[in-house]
Image 1 (spheres, one colour):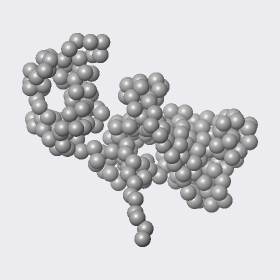
Image 2 (cartoon, rainbow, N blue to C red; image 1 turned 90 degrees about the vertical axis):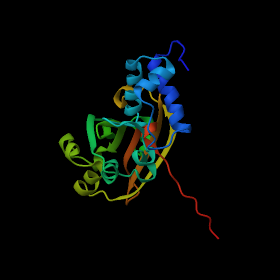
Image 3 (cartoon, helix red, strand yellow; image 1 turned 180 degrees about the horizontal axis):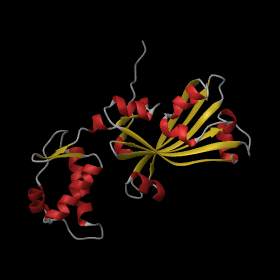
Image 4 (tube, rainbow, N blue to C red; image 1 turned 180 degrees about the vertical axis):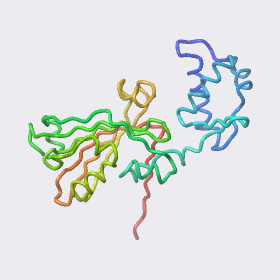
Length: 243
């Protein structure tokens, strides 16, 4: 079956076709057809096929092993369970992955009406803004924008955040014992700036997450808006029937 020429790039069309097969026909661990087989089957050059496989690998859908071939990835292992996303760093380490955090912005500014309402502060109160790119094994996973009340973290400086997890800073350095963190999420599409950081296409599916963290006095110490790659996260919930 040859791919017909249309506005969408040929390798991108092949990515769509193979993604559909991975989702509905193949199983984790299955050996994918070789570059030569895909080239002959779809009437494409080996270069185009190679680009498509590289994109599938970048998306975490396949694993390429030198000398053996390309295998369908087990995404149940690779994806991050949102039910346990209290600490990105800790969860990545539990999964055997190497977490990295890049601080993109750290500044102080005045709360507008929207942030004041969400954080239980007054308009004009001073807030810290922390923007971070969270990655695992070199793959961008999530863009986080975190807001914290300055009055609770007066001496907070960027170098401290570069060497410790945010929750360790909150609890260990500023003695703000966390009581609960509420999180909700919804499906969305990647906006241009986030798409560039996450290395995905503009308009690609993402998960928007909103987390509000309270201390033991029921005060909000953190309000975070995150954009996560939809292909790298999952949500799993258990329903138990009570007698």
